Image: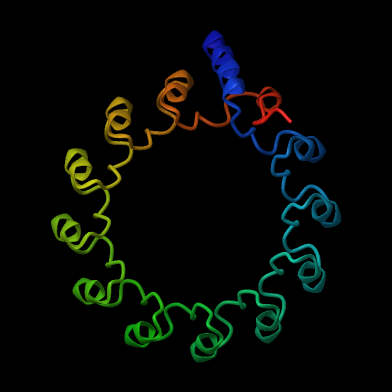
Length: 224
């Protein structure tokens, strides 16, 4: 097993995959051009790096100046609207949010009202047929797989056999077919089941988190 792991590690370096996040120190990761270990550097340092800040640590005003998403839910809805940010969801009444052109408070208006607004309906409240007429995603898992296929919707996942789903051109029932079969179909493999080498040959993402971060860093894309 140890030998196999070593081989896999070497292979992953060659592949230039993303590192095992959260193992290197933030500075090292910044040098590599990777996403930093979130929440470890101070907000100012992260801003200088051009990374997303440590959310929720700076005051809303400071974050706005930086052009980052604000600390959600701390400013009043009106202030956030002025900033052009997403509002504090669920605090304004549905009508007010609609006027702003924001997503409504989901699940508070009746399905009909939401349809008139051109918003996603309150999922799971209208019957499947009604939703289909609206051109919305159906109430998942309520219609039979065949009916959903006719509609051109995603099937009820995990109910049809893998072969049937493949014929439909849908994502397969993940984790039910063997990895080899899924590869032949050009689908994502059953993650974490094949050995790293096999996955690399397929051009898929490897089983993350098995190689050491240092080794992975050396291979960073572009070798800056």
